[in-house]
Every structure is written in structure tokens, then in C-alpha cells.
Amino acid sequence: MSAIILWEVVYKIGVWPEFMFPSPLQVFKTLWSGIKDGTYTIALLHSIRRLLIGYFIATILGASIGVILASNKTLDETFGSLVLSFQSVPSVVWLPLAILWFKLGEPSIIFVVVIGGIWNMIISSSTGIKNVSPEFIRCAKNLGYKNIKMFAKVIVPASIPHIITGMRLAWAFCWRALMAAEILGTGKGLGQILMWGRDMGNMQTVLSVMIMIALTGFITDNLIFKKLEGRVLERWGLLNN
Amino acid sequence: MIEIRNIHKSYSNIEVLKDINLKINRGEFISLIGPSGCGKSTLINIVCGLDKPTKGKILINDKEIQGTDTDRIMVFQNAALFPWLTVKDNVSFGLKNLNYSSKEIEDKVTNILKKVHLNKFKNHYPHELSGGMKQRVSLARSLVMDPEILLMDEPFSALDEQTRLLLHNELQQIWMETKKTIIFVTHNIREAVKLSDKVIIMGTRPSRIIDEINIDISHPRASTNSDIYYKEQQVFKKLKKEIEKVAREELGYEYKLEKDNVPSERNNTMGGGI
Figure 1 (tube, each protein chain N blue to C red):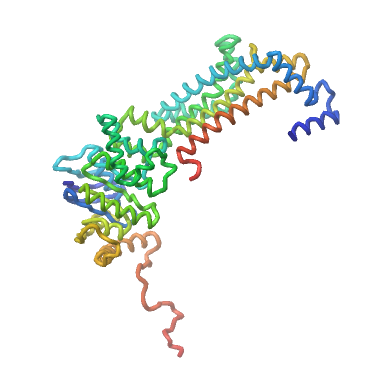
Figure 2: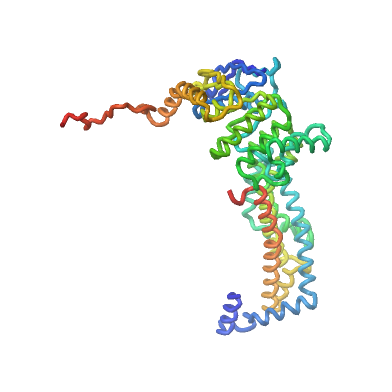
């Protein structure tokens, strides 16, 4: 609320002319009409579809690679440190390569989204597995559990807190990667509308899309992932002690 | 019968256990006691099969053990309950790996939970239980497998005194009913004397068995029993030298457990100035 007041004050002072810095009211009007005539909702659905596909691939692939890294020490020491350095590369940097490999269009954007989330997922799942309390493993071994059963019944559930945190971070990273890729790439997502607003010199559109992006990220993180993470941490007894 | 024969264990040049020999009869309750770092936990882990000795072997009913087995179940210090499972599922965890019907599992679990007075809590998760309750669940999870030998690695050391007393009584009761062989690791002399038939005193560096003290007092034992106090003193006397040795290594060589009765400060003239 205070941010909106500040915004209005800056607008009233007139630091920038109106076409560069629209008032909150104008932006909300654009936002509302965009939602009403369906352009924003359709764009949002397009973006979310890409996000879901990319996120799904990133989590599944990332978790599997994490498991492999955690169970093989040589791989972990070589490829594992590579993962860390890849993580520090913003995923949109991959777009030129992706366009070469997959052509301009849907697959290259999804590729960037996958790259955005996968590194984090690999790191989280492999640390999760490496940090399983040895007492759980000894106890299960004593009770007769071995190999695949040990993995499925003890190691995986014990590392779930780490994996959930990884999934939450991966979601946020994928979302950012998607927006960056959409601004540079093609299609009908939110990023393209933002870019279109820029080309038209229509800052109302740019700002209203920014609000859409922020709201979507905020809602998914708070309503889904925070709750899920909170419940897992409570059950695993990691919240109070 | 358990026979521990010439067990040696070393971790990268540090000798933890040296030539341990011990025989434990069926149905006996024995305690391993000793100063910290004397390798008592290592020894119990070797008997369980979770650790391998560098030399020597463990025979159970004249057969050498190979790794872990469900006839020897360990109760861990921190209960080690699986937080993602309810009390009931924790207790049935080991049974589910064996070929029991779900009806049988259900019956066994209900039975054992009644025995540790936790049937009301069977659908709770570990994070909702107190420390004492967690340790009861852990005990139930081991007992439900009906092992021949129960191994307990400082199971009550993280509990408060009142809870510990309660669990002592219950463990005594359970042992008297089931007649399991129990190996109990502890650093609490009272606990060892109160619960067991025989206290094995271990020394440190090199770790070895110093003495075995039989506690021939009838069960169930009350903690107020004066014979227990007498035996405690006996164990303490044997342990004192070892405790002193550890303290000296940590605190310096002038350390003495018992202080001199006459103060030895230089300025103290013993009343010479009168």
C-alpha cells in the first residue's frame, strides 16, 4: 500500500513525463482491461504452460542426477563442482545456444526454463541424500532393509525436506528464467506482451505485466510452496528443535 | 549364548578395542560401563553387526555372525524414529520387511504398544511425542521383532531423571516377562547396577575389560535397596582409576580425583602463626 502511495507521489512530482512514468491508476486500469479482454489471461496461461513443462523436466531430471551424484563419489567430485559453476550462470545466457539447437520457438524457451531450475534441484537432492542421518540407515539395516528398499523407504523420505526446498527454489528460478527467455524469444507469453509494450512505448502495459509477473510468483510461492515446506518441516521435526 | 572372542578394533592406527573376550548367557542382562572413549559403543555395534572388528569374531549359539540380523536388534541413543511415519508405522517398519500378513502385523503392533503404554498414541507422529515416549516407541520397534538379543546403546542418557526411573522399571518388567538377553551400554553406574545381572567394567587406552561384577540381588529391584548402593560403590572404586586417567589426559597430569585432606598451599602455615 505504501509503495502505491510513494508511486503516486513520484508521479505527481513529475520527475519523468507521463508516458515514461504512468500513475498507479492508469496502470491498474490497463491491468483490468487486459484481464477483462483476455489478452493477459491468455498470455499468463501460455507462460504457465511453458513453466510447468520446463519445471517438470527440471525437477525430475535434476532429482535423478542428484541421486546419481550422491551415490557416486568420483562423479560428485568432478561433475558436482561443475554444477555449482553452472548454477552461477544466468540461464538466459543459454538462449542463443538453445535457439541454434532447437530453433527459435517453444522448445528453446522451455530449454532455458529447464536450465534455470535444474542446477538447484541437483544440488538440493544430492545434499539431501548425503545428509540422511546415519542412524536412520543403521537402524533400517538392523531391521533388515537393504539396497533398493532401503533407498525407497528410508533414504528418499529422509531427504524430503531438502528436496522440497530445492523444488521451491527451482520454481522461483524457472519463473525468472521463463520471463527472461520470453522477453528475448517468441510466442504469446507474458514476457512477449511486456516486450510489445516497450516497442509501442506503452509503459502502462509494461508496468501492469510486471505486476502480473510479481503476483503470480508471490501467490504460487506463498500459497503452495511455503505451506508445503512448512508442513514437511513440522512433520520432520525440524521446525522447533 | 553370545561369545565375544579376541575382538580387536582399530580406526586408522588408533586402537579402540584390544583383545576383548566375554561370554554372555542366554537371558542374561549385562551392562557395559566405562569412561567416555573406552569403546563400549563400538563393542555393541560389533555385536550388532553394524561394525566389523579388525580381528576376532562374535559367536552366537556357536555360529559366527555375518553382518546384522533381526535376531539382534539395537535400541539407539536418540531413538532414531523415522519422522515421516506414525508411531504405528514406525513400530511395524521391521515387520513389513518380513512375510507377515497385515492382520498379524496389526496384532503384534497393538500388543507391543500396549506393553509400552502407547496404544493411545499409535497415530501420532514422532515430533508430537516427548523424549521418553520416543524411546518407548524405539523399544517397541525393537521388541516387536522378537529378537533373541536386545542391544541398547545408552538408550536413556538423553532423558530427564524422572522419565529415566520410569523407563528403568518398565525395562525391568519387560525383561522379566520376555527373558531376552540384553546388552546395555551406559555411563551411569546406578543405572547399570540397578538393571543388570552383571556389570562389565571397561577401561580405556587400550580399551579392555577390567572387571566383571555380579549383581546378585533379586528382581524387581527398588532404587532404595541398600545392596544396590553397596554394589555401586564397588563398581565406582574399580572405575575411579580409569576416570582419573581420562581426566588427567584431558586436564593435565597433576589432576587427582580425590583431593588431599590437608591443603598444600605454600602460604598456609597450618596455624604456625598462632
